[in-house]
Image (cartoon, rainbow over all chains, first blue to last red):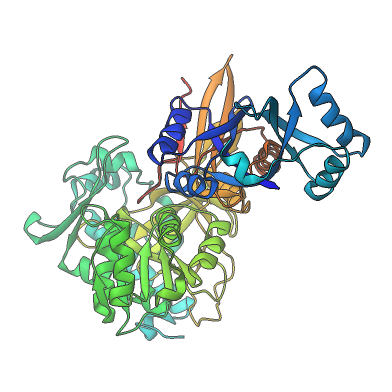
Length: 143
Length: 433
């Protein structure tokens, strides 16, 4: 159920983002979803890649400060109100979503989003009870 | 406690004062052989006869770094050039370089002082001494080298840099004592960790630090990282080099070899002598040097002398506190005096940041701005913006408490700041004065 997300600390310095993607290219790693959190003086790039362990090792070796975080990937009906429905279930149960971002690819007419919550265990049951499909990790890495 | 020269190291204060008085007179007599002192002492009607008690030293003018520069290359030489067997010179990065000359007896005395320091550190015949300080015109490497040989240690004269080889030598030759700058020791420990090694893989027993001011927190951090004792060595090239003062480890501070130097503490602004225990600029007078005696030399190093002279190690030589900074590396930021060592002290207490840092100064709309750059460590990054914001606040707060001004904290990637090898360049001042 849980998906491994790679987070990378980035200084505000020209070329660093490119160097990061170069590192992934050299290892033939494919980015499935990504989001860049930007503050005034540093950024954190978050991404789902097809082989997370390998990506983590490669980035560390290149001197990046990287971390692995567990997130959930859920299927969202690709129509108005689709995402609202998913979030309603979490909201009703008082689960706080720290951040989320979307996958590039769709799966059979449905969109997919990455959701980061503090209480992963509880969120899984809340979402399942609301009939939301949580995507298994293997499937997510190869979306 | 072991001694290299028990008789002199345990000399009583009264006997020491008599020895100092006799040697001070000899020093003044020798100094008059140099063109510089012949003029300066002549202008002030000073001669060996001016000295009836040690207090008479106060009648002598100070000798400053600029006087040494102006005397380049030979105006302070007090013996025939042919008698000189070695010279050392400063890098001259901040002006004309300064030269110090030694005759054979001077080198013999210097080596003896260093041997005393090393034995005080627990060194003994059979130890393996890896000298990770630069050799050459700089006195740090060579000074300890000869003292270590004299003690009977196996000396590895590897110098600074080439970190992988240094670590390889720790393993291959069973190094027990290293002589290193604190900033390089921090870097080496990072490399040891990156290689997947730990202090258990070595036989290190003692670290000897010299050449740059650093904080007590850095020492504690390094003692934990290497799991050994770290001792401070103090010296300056004008007073030979390393071996002027050294820690016995029993009480705070470093014993100054007062049979070879008279030490005074002055107010750096007024030049007035300060009462015992006050912090100020350290002033040295050589007592045994023949080729180039120096009288009341202003070191620019800021420290204090502890009042008590008795010590559980058995020595009665006065103890010098750690050097808190130099009169010339003090930063004045928005009118507040700040020493880089204060900032370092605070940073070393924050485990989430790495061992390198940089201080940037610039001026925005005529106001000083101080930015402190620190590296986050890969081990403490968990991927959250919030934790990094908190870390910035924590550092900012700790610095504000210590130096009383607000700083901007810039978080950098691991390895983004230049690692320091040798004397660290930590401050970049872009303010236009």
